[in-house]
Length: 261
Image: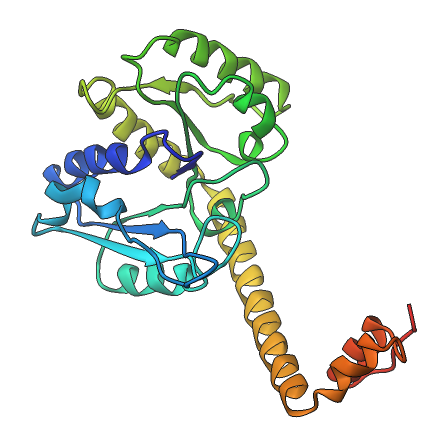
């Protein structure tokens, strides 16, 4: 579940989770909270809006710090989801931090991506067209009791039509967590979309595995490079004094010949 800050992701997830758990499903929520770029700490407050869900016997709500990762997720989101899957949770919801246009990592981690928007975003939908609007499987207009909800649905439907998505075109669901309207139909619609994915789910999961392997390799390489620079500060000094280029220094750290660019 993803969307811009303040659209009501946590509250809506809590309402959806209550419906799913009452039907007998075992549900887990990984709520990603942003980490401070200065202290490294995170408030981990999303679960406050899911208190009833978190106290249920067949549900688990876990807040996770983003640890500086861009894209709306945490570096260990995939591993955490694997553990929850092995523990028998049938529905695993990942709530991203408040995201913008290009933060689409969730589309490669989850089987089904739900994009939530709210009335009053103005040109926000236009700004999301080249990113989030293209990767969602379910589109939600939250806070449908607020002014502008119908206009939001019209804007969303137009944006989806312009995104040149394959048929069938995704529907836009209006709901209100505060009023409790449209939540049950949305909960069922998400499950229906997930069940209808077929071979697309396998392709998405293979791409997720590929990205995870590359991410781990990149992280390992960055760690090795940082350690080498710590042990040999002359590498930094050489670039600082313009005796060598950053590309040559990086190539030396990686153990290959640089091109000097």
